[in-house]
Amino acid sequence: MTCRCSLVFFAAALFLVSSHSFADDVDSSVPPPGSVYREYFLDNKGDADWRVTDPQATAEGARKKLPNSILKFEVDDLSHVLRATAVFDRWGGHLKTTDKRVRFNGGDWLTIPEISTTPDGLPPEKFYSQDNPVIEVPIDQLKEGTNTLEGTCGVIENANWGQWGLYSMRLRVYLDPESVSHPEVKIESPVSGGTFGENPVIRLSAESENGVSRVDVVACYNDFDENGDGRFLDWHEAYFQPTRGERAHLSEHVGTLTREPYEQTWDTKWVPNQNPRTVRLLARAQDSRGVWTVSEIVDELTLERTSHTVRLFPAIDVPTRFGVRVGQEESCRIPVALKLVPKAEARLALRTWHGWDGHHEPLSLNGHSFPIHGKNHHYDYDQLPISVDWIRTGDNVFTIRSMTEHHMLEVLWPGPAILIRQPVHAD
Image (tube, rainbow, N blue to C red; front, side):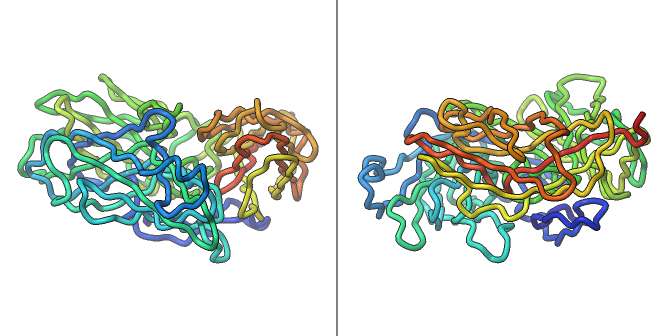
């Protein structure tokens, strides 16, 4: 079983959100098992360099952003390289912006794929987004020393300000395992086909003749899409820049270890119930010289709870333009097929751009208001505690409003979702 899927919408008859169509892992930001690689980073700074503007833009504000910046990053070693990929921290930018491309060292323009999970064939350029797309980078477009990266784009229809955001880039150069010293890493427990309960301890072995500096643990399962590609059943991690100008870092994964014993407790309190034998785990180890190795996958795992159940309910009818300003209002529905019991808890999962409370009205669920807690002119991912008393069995209406004349509040694809955790047997 591979671990990529199309966004799925709610169906009341399902025990889980599980009607996925699977695709290959070739575009995954997760390196495949057995990979050996090094990483090099570009982290954009300031208020201008991250913007990539359509060179043909006609809006006055857009013309002030041109020409696009030529960014620089360092690569110290390209020996024994087999292939290379680039993982981007990308804001989808202004609606109708398309043909997003980059080039390295003045080489050929390389197309960055758009999200592919929007419903009913609707163009992804008509939805607000932030994601971690991956492209192949021809080795002959890279060099040891200082490299350059440049972006461009176009538009669809009559848009006059094509723009997207290139916040960060993680270049992975994959190495011949037979030619370089690299760590060894293995998940010892659980084992494939096993069953685990709440908050399991994952035990690993990792060693290297150059010393192990870091071990990351990542899981594939069904949960809210935190990295913006619209896939709920996925390897759950995000390449996330907490504040514009900082280095993007790994988040939303199981955890990171930096010393022995290599034992990671997975906090599964808000992980939704999973179908049996569908959870997968892998680990990555880095040595003191910056070389990474990826473990084999432990698969067909079962999360078994006895005291609580956790359910995920994604939004439906998400607007193509889910953004508001100057008195606008937009809504979507979140159907919930669950009878709530005493001692239930709830959260609303949400991804925004410029979801700053200083500029916008509070969020609303069925007429009950609560803060956004987003960032000023930046993206954010939050799980906001909400009262279960606000939630209805059936359709729930999520609404955004804003009176600001400044930048609008954008709700990013795939829209919000409600998580509910409650006892199996209430008092």
